[in-house]
Amino acid sequence: MLRAWERYQNQRGDHYAAGITYFTVLALFPLLMVGFAVAGFVLAGNPELLTEAQDKIVENAPGNMGDQLNDIIDQAIAARATVGVLGLLVALYAGLGWVNNLRAALTEQWDQQHEQGNWIRTKISDLGALIGLGIALIVSFGVAAVGSGSLLRQVLEWLNLEDAPGVGVTFRVLSIVVGIMASWAVMVWVIARLPREPVTFRSAARAALIAAVGFEVFKQFGVIYLNIVLRGPAGIAFGPIIGIMVFAYFTSRIILFATAWAATAQENLAMAPVPPPSGAVISPRLAVRGGPSVAGGVALVGAGALAALGLSGLRRKK
Image (cartoon, rainbow, N blue to C red; front, top):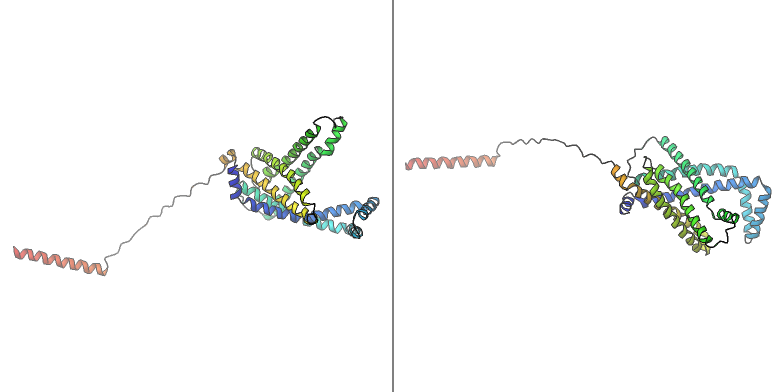
């Protein structure tokens, strides 16, 4: 855990989590545009459903708000094609930015050295990763739907076990286990396949299980948080967007920390490339010494004169 936390901090995990959160919120609005366009096509092809929806809105909306909402619905139906095409284009742009940031964050956690390739090839690769992640999410939603509360209740009713002792606790545990399995399927794909360089699937699977458990715990607290926040008028106005930002940020942190956990596993540390030492550079130094300076020459002459005087004095004594 300490190795994983050190890797997460050194590779700027919080910085990348904030970037992923930004692109998540940015991609939310074009996705809403696409959703409105799809709803417009559905309502335009089913007048009875449109009339029923508008009647329900008028009954439940306070004051003249119902009429205003119905006008918005009519405008959305009239501009459904334009809104849908524009939403798809902007969603594609935001989605590519989102998946590029996510892949860069995962690559950093694996401490991989990835060379920048051709821009078009990179975007095609990101598009393929985005499509693959979409398929993984569909599989995850399918698993979650199988283990959803309504389906499990129907199974228990078919088996006449809805009133059996302990069925409530069992039902709750099964729902959590199925939710962890659904999250694990997505986490494995994200940790093992989204980095720009191939990684070991075994380590990614173990780390994905840790991430799935952490994500399930976070979801349970998130439900409590939303129930508290959405009680007041300010919470109704700003609670959903704040909840989305908090959800995206902490989910990103969970995924990145799990990736750091996988990257610092013993088998991956043994496989980590060790850069060779730099080559020895032999550079001989040649020092050229010049002749004596002027002061040195004068000193030598003086010493020679004194020596000559000393020798002549010795000869006279003899």
